[in-house]
Length: 261
Image (cartoon, rainbow, N blue to C red):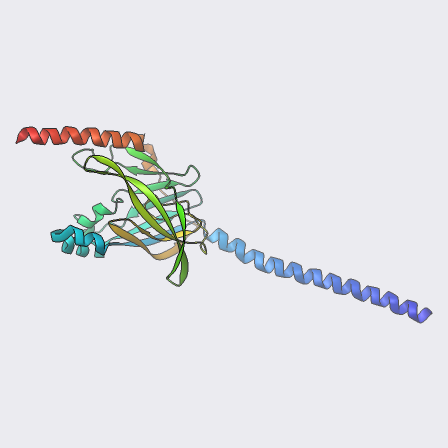
């Protein structure tokens, strides 16, 4: 009887050791998985992304006599998207070939674009033209409203998914909605992209509209990056006020040109 009692005590101790060992192994697995994920997510907080821009073949066919120049010009266009947890700044990488580059005007990003991820707004200087002075105003835009599409493809060995949205544009003195398509990568969980396109469940790899396409080129994570917010120090107007001014000034300009004939 004494022997049996001793064996039962030893069995209980063995079970306790096994359970404790099992808990230790589970905790070890948990922390082994957790720490890389934490480090991975922290690395996503700051960095720079380079996008290249190409004119779309379908639009080049419409451009006819300008198609050759537009195609050549778009061979030399790249943009950088700097980002941290709260802000992104998208800007043209200027060089000699972009100074009088016709294709850049179709990107709608000759002027830098700053996005506030918390407010879900993005900001851009008014375009310099006969209608506006250089950096006359900063225009505040709402983030695009996206519709997720059940369609995917492989880009740079990553699976990306399709989303569709719209933005406003002035064409023939009328405000029209233009379609925009994004391909985003949930594997990289930062909801940002080029040209103020934010809010999707993953980094935007490709952004395209009627005129051209932004395509991701490389990503560099950098925790020491500091983003310039000088664009917010300018007088800020809403998107609606901007388009009202644009239409009004366009009419005045067209009338002045007509009177000179």
